[in-house]
Length: 166
Image (cartoon, rainbow, N blue to C red; front, side, top):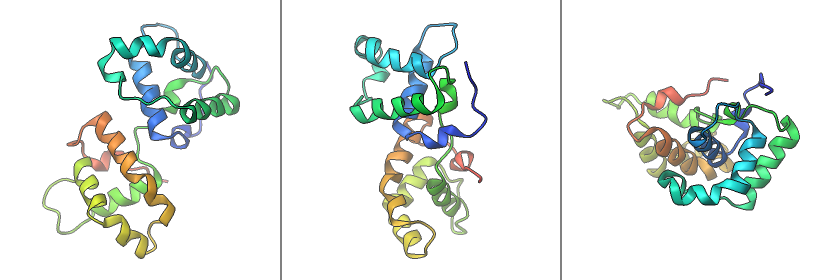
C-alpha cells in the first residue's frame, strides 16, 4: 500500500470522502484498505451492504462518484491507501467561513458546525462574496460540505477543529 505525502484528501469531494470513510469503517478485513478495494466494494459488494447496513443507505452512488474514484486510481494508483482520501478538515473556502464565524465578536458560545450552517443559510457567504473574501463559485457547494461534516461528526462538533490552515 502506497502512502501519499501530500494532502490529497482536500482534492476529494465531501461525498466520496464520506463514502470511503464509511466503507473503511464497515469492511471486515485486516488487510490495508486501498483505492482498488474501495472500488471493488462499490461495484461488487455495495448493493448487498445497503440492505444490511442502515447507515450506508444514504449514499447515492452515481457515475460521477465512480468517475471521481477512477480518476484518483489513475492518478495515485490502485494501491494508494484509502484512508489518505478521507477528509476531516473543511475546504479552504469553508475554512474561511468557519474562521469568520469563530472570530465574530458578538458570539457568546463556541461556534459549532450547526452554527456555521446557520450562518451560511443566513447570508454570511453572500456578504463574504461581496467583501471579496469568497469567490462566487466557492459558495455553490458549501452547504453540501457543511452538511457532510455534520452528518459525519454531529451538529455540535466544535467548528474550529475543522479549520484547514494553508
